[in-house]
Length: 100
View 1 (cartoon, rainbow, N blue to C red):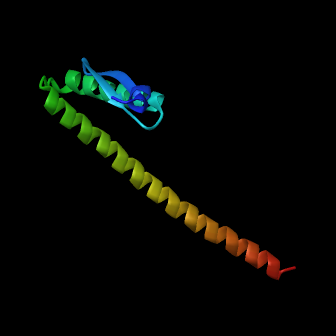
View 2: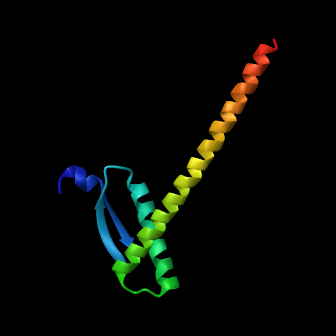
View 3: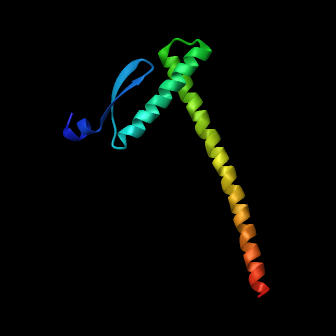
């Protein structure tokens, strides 16, 4: 491991397993991501009674991807609403300039 890797190494625990991960980003953000994954896996383990770590990891991944897809869809809808409102506002401004 070189100096850059050592400086960017992060120790985390996910579902009772210790990992040393390397990042070229913010180590605290990586810790937050790992904590969120750990929380999701623990939740799924308690609610589904699945004991196999690999199956829990797949369930957690599917759950998180579902969250991402729903957030993307919500963002897309908001972008469409903002676009329509922007056009409406531009029309109002154009109309008011014509009345000057």
